[in-house]
Length: 337
Image 1: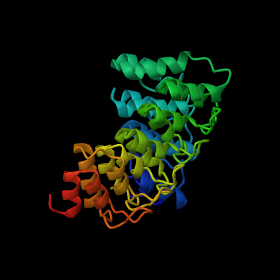
Image 2: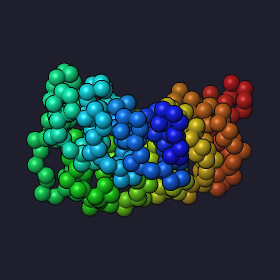
Image 3: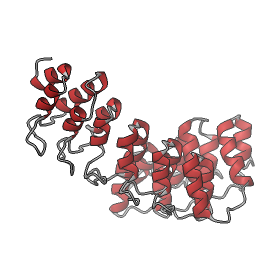
Image 4: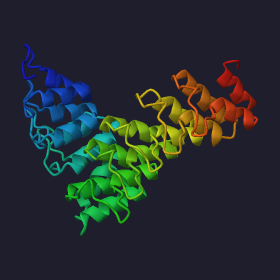
């Protein structure tokens, strides 16, 4: 993974600059040198920050890369993210991850002689300036773990980054056993979740109610949160307190867009929960037969859901639909729509 071509490119370095997270993880598992340098004497962290690859930046920080290395032109990763980046969500996420990772924020760049905050002001990047100004002026919280949990519940991604910078345990829990990522998922605070996922928070951490950040997405139906958690590689087989996967409550609640997306993750569409119901059965038994539940049934069938699976009483989804007078659902299940 460290072998380089004539331009001093390696598979590892290419993965960092191109944002190929899976390839990066493979390279690191295969023994790539995390602090390897390119022809500009830059690390993978600098390359990833320049391109706004927040997830790659987080992965490299977790791997122990030199977070403050200065390249041949006098830039650290945070300089490159600001001076060569844009005032967009991708770069805001990237700078937050760098802040959370504890990078130096007061060093001046080699040519412009500007700090990262001064760079943001010079560029007119208001969003990046806000993130950096809060970081530069912040005092460490008295209780970093409590600060992280409060920030996650409130949806304050900058405060969450500062709590991590101050040494908060990313898996710290509140009185109900909820981690910061679970609190962010519960309240659909996607920016906080993206930060926490990039920094290695577990999407599988169970609370006292047997919820995880991933399982909660099936209840809220948030596709944005689903997408934020997928790079963290959630275990799709972990079950909620009813013995169900996230697809089942999403189907019950008629979360059409979520169901459409989650069936493409490889989740078991025919999983049977402790009540004896699959997602298809819940969509019929607990659904209202209206347009949203009709669409859920259609999506599940197209994803290969087995319409012949019956509940504990031996009643199939089709028989339930007939009994409930859900004519449109009956037509879907009969294949006559």
